[in-house]
Image 1 (spheres, rainbow, N blue to C red):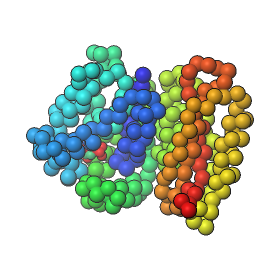
Image 2: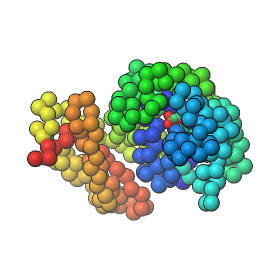
Image 3: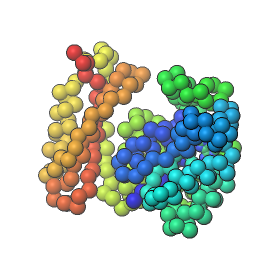
Image 4: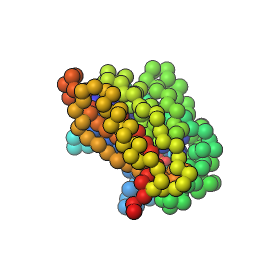
Amino acid sequence: MLRALLLAPPGAGKGTQGQRLAEIYGVPHLATGDLLRQHVAGATPLGVEAKGYMDRGELVPDRLVIELILARLTGDEPLRGFVLDGFPRTLNQARDSRSWGRARRTTFQAVISLAVEEDELVRRLLERGRRSGRTDDNEVTIRNRLRVYDESTRPLLDFYRGRGILVEIDGTGAVEEVTARIRAALDHILGLPIEGTISRFVQANPKGPGQGDVPGLLRRVAETLAGLGPVEVTGLTLENQPTEDGPWYSVSVYFHPGDAGDGRSRGRTTRGPLPSSS
Ligand code: AMP
C-alpha cells in the first residue's frame, strides 16, 4: 500500500498529481491546504486561527498542522496508505512525522519532488487564481509563498535525499506525462511492473476544435493494444484538458497482460485534440 508525499513549490501540480496518484494506487489523498480551507470555510477555532497566515502566504504554525494531519491519519480507522500533499512543509513537521511513522512502522516509501521553473509557477498560480478565485493566488501572496517554500520547505529535499527516498520528477509538460513519470518511479519502488508511456502525441490543432485527427488517434490506440500481444482490456477513460493550444483529450486504456494473470492492471495513454461536440 502506497505511503508517499508530494514535496513541491506552490503551483507545481501537487494537488492535481496527488488526486490522480491516490486514485491510481487506491489510497486517500490528504492535502493539508484543503483541510485547512475546510476549517476556514467552517469558521472553526482552527480555521479562524489559520486564516490570517494563509491569506498572507505564510505557514500556519506547526502545532496546528501537525494536530490536524495526525488526527486524520490516526482517526477512527488508522490509515495504512496515503498520498500526502503539502505536509510536511517544515523540518519540524518532517521530524515529527518521521518519529510518528517509525513508531507505527508507516514511514514514507517515497517523497516525490516536482521541479518547475519559478516563472512557470507564477503563471500557473495566477491562472488558477483567475479560474478558482482562491484568495491566496494573487501576485503578492504568490511571491511570498514561493519565498516561504525556499526558506522553510526546500531544505526537506536534502532531509529526504539523505534518507534515500527522494524521487525527483520533472513537473513540466502535460498532466498525464507528469503522472506517467511519477508512476514509473513509484511502480519501480513498489516492485510493480513498470509502465511505459506512448509519446506519439498528435500536434496541437491549428484549425481549432473539431478538426483533429480523431479516427487516427483511435486507430493508434487500437494498434498499440494489438502490438502488445494478448491483453484483457479492463477499462477505458477519456479525459479532456484545456491547453494554450486549444483543448486536448487523453485516452487511457487499462488492461491485464493476457499471459501474466497476476491481476495487476497497467495503462497506456495517448492524446489528441478534442473533437467538436457537433
Ligand atoms: P496549499 O493548498 O498546499 O498551497 O496550502 C495553502 C496554505 O495552507 C499555505 O500557504 C499555508 O498557509 C497553509 N498550509 C498548508 N499546509 C501547511 C503545512 N504543512 N504547514 C503549514 N502551513 C500549511
